[in-house]
Length: 292
Length: 160
Ligand SMILES: Cc1cc2nc3c(=O)[nH]c(=O)nc-3n(C[C@H](O)[C@H](O)[C@H](O)COP(=O)(O)OP(=O)(O)OC[C@H]3O[C@@H](n4cnc5c(N)ncnc54)[C@H](O)[C@@H]3O)c2cc1C
Ligand code: FES
Ligand code: FES
Image (cartoon, rainbow over all chains, first blue to last red; front, side, top):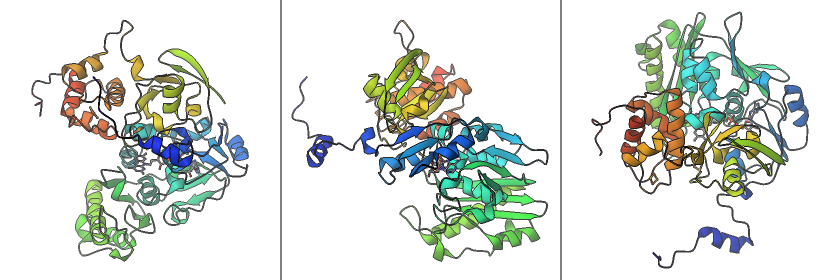
């Protein structure tokens, strides 16, 4: 069978415009870079000392970014071959330590016994294929305002361990896509104190699979922490008024009458500021309910 | 840079750039064009392959990251005599495809699911396929095919 004249292939049009390089569907979308895959933290840090070198975790955020030509690293230093940065373990004091290059799927499976709420958070990120590649270090370093891990890290009062220092979650996140990480500094592990009870409630944005709003509530012997993602222009944050109310009485009703000021909320086609502010209250109540 | 990996049981070698994607290596260098590239932005799942036993989106992984790995693609699913795998046959029997563009990714995701969870519930199948988009079927027959491939009775699942 012969088809009639087909419409021109957009790739051809683009090639003509740009003198030959079609940006669709091929690796020539990305600027060229070298690739290194060290097997130790020390070698990775050395390789990251090169000018414009960048760490590669699971690539689930970075590769799409490179395809959009929003970054032009000279060399990508893969962290996936560093055994000392992969895996989950429980320390003597009960803290859960997750290697910085551990994929979400491993956390979902292996932390399920020791810290079920965090494992459940990891198991809700993206889809199975994304969870098999994406890593906790990449997610925390990226600090996407709608990402799940930042809420779990801040809500748990975790400690971010890098090749040079340890930073408390309260001091780590510095607004949308910003953290205290220095150039070439890598997250080698994240250390989570395990609360008595906790829950992550994610209101899914079904197209991106990220959180439209996500709330992490953790109840420790010395107090409750509430961390909110997906909502604020300033990225992940602690809802301290809710924490104070829940410290008095750990019940959903304790939040009645509390609301978030919508002024700083994100507004986009998926939800207005007021809608997101409302969702923060609703998801916090659900998280408390689920932690009872 | 040199890269080598085992693809569908066969050791292959190639010369790639840092930026060469696994999907590009499979399709352009190995001519394994069964792995489809739909969105190229990690959204649609048409490019799902197995790397060391787990499902990944090959459009979102560098070929060099798969150096030394065991890679499985749709071309490796059929039996040696060319007859379809249980999952592929179930897709055919239950009309789990229309245009077929999403099918390689669907089959590879289904194979990964059934390896870990040999008798999933319908809800578990739907949940597992969250990263695989189909623009034709409306998913019902894909889910039905995967349930059937797991050896479960699907007569009660309506062909909507
Ligand atoms: C379809 C899809 C759906 C998704 N859904 C969700 C979701 O629901 N929730 C969610 O939270 N995320 C989601 N993500 C993002 C996913 O979790 C990413 O894996 C994560 O944000 C980045 O981790 P990565 O290991 O892939 O990092 P990469 O993409 O490799 O890197 C991201 C950034 O972090 C840096 N980096 C990587 N590792 C380290 C390290 N150890 N130390 C310091 N810097 C490092 C890189 O240099 C880069 O700047 C989704 C992604 C996709 C493609
Ligand atoms: S082509 Fe890879 S996810 Fe769509
Ligand atoms: S059968 Fe056409 S996209 Fe799924």
